[in-house]
Image 1: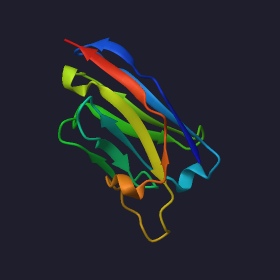
Image 2: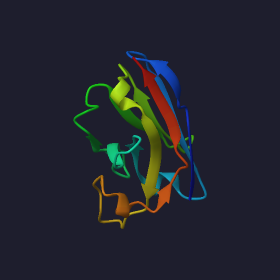
Image 3: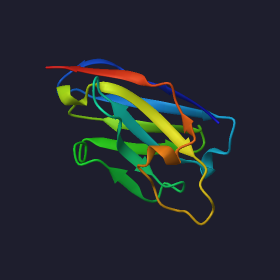
Image 4: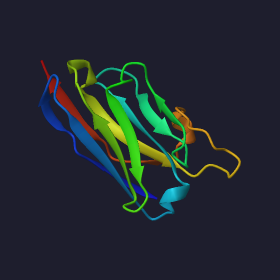
Length: 127
């Protein structure tokens, strides 16, 4: 599975961006997926994730109410809609995916669980 992240850019505080993660080379509907980010000098953190069915989702407290994760199985693409962006949201955003066993239906924020990673897209929020 190959993941291609896009949509990053430079915005002002309070504005919005939508990130996309296009997947190829696998069965998209079987992928469990998430978005993580890494700010300069900080550890990578997951900001949003969902189960392979998309039925359950996770949001970090720092983005709840502002970010929305979604997927379009017809386009093999996952999205992260970001509203009310803040300077502290500045980071490189990575999409990640894995194909968990059938019995595992939940999301995960464990980076080691994900087998596939996109190249990252930079989001810069100016104050």
